[in-house]
Figure 1: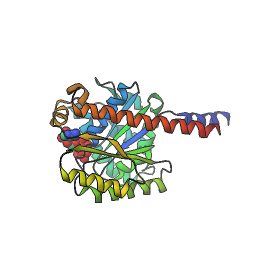
Figure 2: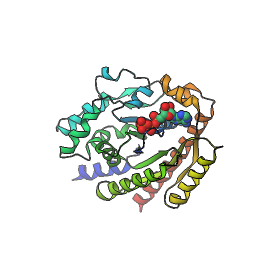
Figure 3: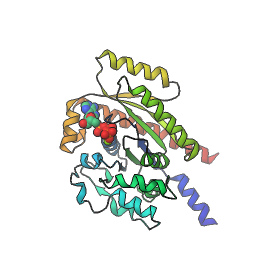
Figure 4: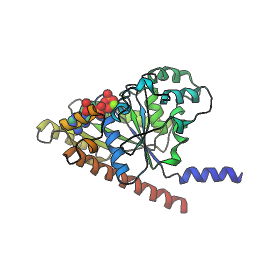
Length: 287
Ligand code: ATP
Ligand code: MG
């Protein structure tokens, strides 16, 4: 019994925060944000694991692992083992990168897991089980989600403490946000009561265009009272596209550019929120 309450204590004391980068809309900067938020947090001395939960494996490739078919272990192997009730050696699947963050890679096989999950008995918690094996080694785990609200994204939301929503300020983005926020609420109600939305991050912002400013103020009016719109906006820059193509973070590719400066600032905003929540959790425990 003592051991059990000890374990409970350990879990409560876990200083790791798991953040899912989610938006069912494609190409809004989820993967770019995963890489550069991860590196920004690492540059502040945090230990960071990036989890590629997308069969497109863009995150894996963005960190320089371009031949994803040759990777010995990927997230789909680990998730399959959990589904089959086998033991999983998650640390063995983790890759180191030159950017100072660790990576749980993906490959095209992950697409098959999506359907396998539907009939699995622990279908919502498979990713959570994988991540909890290694949580103690990290300050932040960032999950890069695929552009859909399927089983893999539900798994990411079930495993997460919070959600960051990258959003490109386009005219049609507002309907999509509505649907996404409803899905997050459903997961919170049914699976993961502690889930919260940390905020909406405006990406690929072209500040001088009128439509951008109109959409940003529409989003603020619609959600700003309940959901944080991060102070940081990520500017549009072709350097970001080039960095992706080179398999580098913006910090390695163009460290004195405006996108690097923005992601550095965003990393500080996220770390600040993380720190405040940790202090609050600590205070709640002492009460
Ligand atoms: P998917 O939904 O397919 O997973 P995503 O939401 O992960 O896409 P990214 O892959 O991060 O989006 O970005 C889409 C494209 O936009 C990429 O080519 C990327 O290089 C580019 N991009 C990301 N951020 C910026 C930026 N700040 N300025 C210009 N281009 C950017
Ligand atoms: Mg992506």
